[in-house]
Amino acid sequence: MELFKRITILIIAFSLSASCSSENVLSDFSNKESDEALYIDAKKALDEMEWDTTIDIINNQLSSTYQDKRDVKLVLASAYAGQCGLLFANLIQGMTNNPSSQMFRFFMGVWAGRTVAPDSCELAIDVLQGIGSVSERSDKENLFLALLGVARMGTNLSANLDSGDHDGDIDADATVCHDDASGSLTKWPDGPDDPGNPDVLPFPYIDMYRDEFGHPPGGMTKYLSANAMKRVASGFGLVLENFAALSDALGSGTSIDSIGDLSADCDAALAAIPGAGAGCATMTTPAAVSDEMVYAMRFMMDSAEFGWGTCSIADSVTFFSSLATYNPFTQSPPGTLCCPSTRIPGAPF
Image: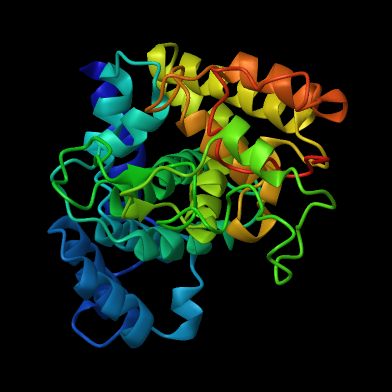
């Protein structure tokens, strides 16, 4: 309980508490249109969880000079985060008490029964990233961004995979392996009878690959598009970029240990996938997320270790490492391959 209170104070009180010692607000309080008076109104609105009011005051009523103040930016980011669905106390308590190593289940489960607005999380992240790099931000700001990384992952997972009953678990008609309902955008390519497909294989045995690796599952109506997956991946990148601040705040425990394990497996997967470049921790914006990273996130979500499936990350990485010598005429993919019906980026077949 003491840890919970301490971290809550670090973030919430840091943003909300009036700093009368640093500004002579009393001299301007009689002028209710002054920046100082409006800023106090904004923080009161934030304290009452009136997100829209807080955002309106800061963006539309404060002067541009006052908007640029660092503490004002933190209040604005906090309002966007609240609008997104992030309540710091709930998330910190959940991460402190989380007993599961299946982190994608946890990331989404936090938002069970709650309304989420992923676009508002993006606005909060933009505000904080605009302050500067990791070294230029304070520990509190980096902790804030780490938690926003968790929120970026969780709200996008919830909005796309749990929109049916909002129970915190993946819906029966949802898939993590494909970026459209039919799987047509990420399936193994069609054969030579499809001249419009630039990935057509130069031989007539494409059906062998489709039969070997499997066809996209039918009946799926929920999925993670490439853009949504890039948000999830870059949310994880934010957590890793600011992991030191998160670890210092939470200490050891299942969540911290599992994030470390997920990071190691993510880097191992990227190292094995043909054509992959930068590591997972460097992808902190959706634009920075590679196609290889999108694929890596898909199969980790399908894994027994971290996600909703029964496949093996270790077996999948081993298979990726041997793609150059794989022969479909004499070999078969492992039965524990994650997202087998999803084409592997850079596959030579």
